Image (cartoon, rainbow, N blue to C red; front, side, top):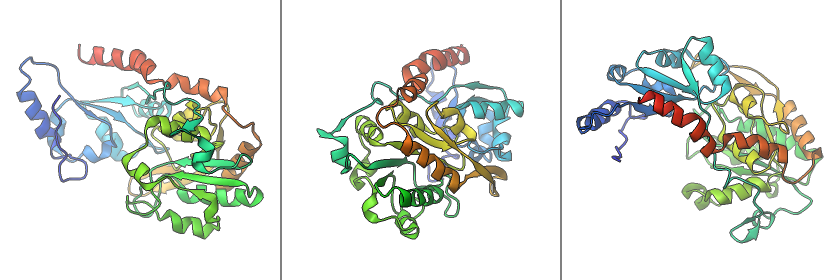
Length: 335
């Protein structure tokens, strides 16, 4: 299988047609071809050469309303659209864009309740006492410098308010603490809210940069008493499913794809409209008071693996999705 390099442009928009032409020239068997994209669609509008190539796009729709430039690309006649969440499919249907629904998948043989990590009980590894309540966040710290879709500010402020009532609570943030990946300075944000440094845990920088083994991440999810995951909008939200597969209840937004990933034991927070000027579309901003209330409800909930969450996440098992969704799609598309 040939692997093509990315270009010097941000999204390799310029090299996609070249790479496709190179592959097609070597396709002596005359196999049906397509470029398969898993990325925000609006970035691909400005290269006319892409209008002449069959494209399949697994399209994330993370706004409450569909951005016009997203709609522009998805309506092109050479583009076949796959929705990754029911909310995305509803938006596509509302704009008359033909689509197929296929969600992301996880390996539920790996993402399951896990007690130990690297030979240690997970609480010992994270240095958590038995009577402490661990809130976890798993989210990329990337932004445009002004707006952070993952709502780090709102979530951290809400945790600081919650912790004043529950001083035994700790916050684990599985993300880059600095602005080096284009996000916010989370240390400054934490200081501004008055959360004691001893109450916050970041992963080892080498583990974060090189990537934990999935079984180790499953153990970390299992160590959370709740996953804190409200955001301005999600196209899917894989950590939400991974956490529930490990038996961990989740707190999510009540809009976009997040509402579709909320199992029966989860909590959904309220939000208010938030205008995304660059995309000319609406996000929602999660309300801090609503997050605090959800954290309080999670604190009162039973501890330990939640079977309802595990059962809910089972529908996203990767083998099941491959068998029931991807195989029929590919057989039909490449027939």
